[in-house]
Length: 435
Image (cartoon, rainbow, N blue to C red; front, side, top):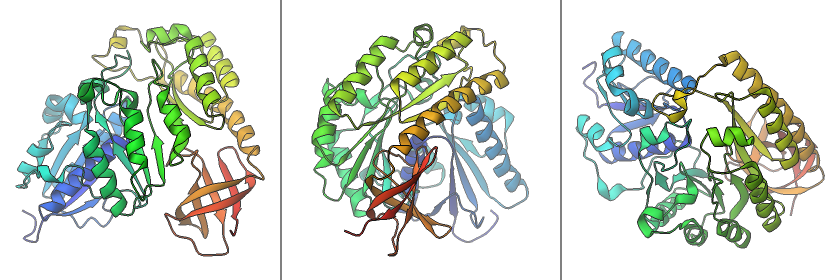
């Protein structure tokens, strides 16, 4: 061992918010075992590293492998005693990784937290279920309501890495929410591979509406946000609960992936373009001001220029508030892997940029309409002498921000009313209204 002092563990998290929650749970378990544990430690005064990897698409895999190699390099230089690797990449490619990077002390899959803890001579404490050390600012947190996915989208390797859909019990989630409130959390973001499946395995019916009603009763929570709802057979009761419960943000993240019927069928999305249009119209008829976010894939095998034009026409007609675009990644063991991936990465990137630029104009126009409105804003941070916050229509990191000017000092977690005076492609700017 490099030193005789107490072990200090640094956790590096790559990939999505679901991975972040896993790292927070891991931190909570280590802290309960009297470990000194930190996230993304810049001081480099730790002697053990756990890299929580992402294996979703090629870019994420590359980032994960580079991060592991960087940590192994520090170990070779005597700056670290142990390097451990967990998460999706490790789940999927464990044997290859053990062969390619033997300097890593141990690799663990996505569901092997007890084994990882045991390797560190720590006990897995079942009574701590739901307890975490937050890596986010204390006023917001992600809450994972289920694990895995039963969908069979042809491009997606997540079921291979995370297994079948498994819901957490409502009791567990309510007590987790209550604990988060005690830690200062005011906004919880519900995440899952597939939110709308929640409860099917445990309760034999979709229970997201009931879960939302129960969470809305938890005192101290001010905003509840929904991420990753699958559009096929979407349960509209969710929208009815959203309309009735003021704590639930009028915001829905619904990844569509494409809009051309050819592509939707090839992607095994179990929905047609017309059904998508009907669903969006129905959601907006129930909550006219709802913010709809979606994500799309550019460059799926067989996608033509006509498919891209059809997608842009769909975006023009649907007027989404927020759109993210990924380039297609050819993943082994998915059903799309048998398709010929003919486009170069540069061609995929060009298509993605074309779609992003098209949506940028829509985003600018939508933001212009907000000038003169007074919106409730949650302050996230102070940066370069100004406050940065978000409205209920914006999630952390992926969506718009509001630049807030205030005569009075504000702190992260404060809610303020802001009169919007300027609007840009993706951000708003305004002054705090003294009430």
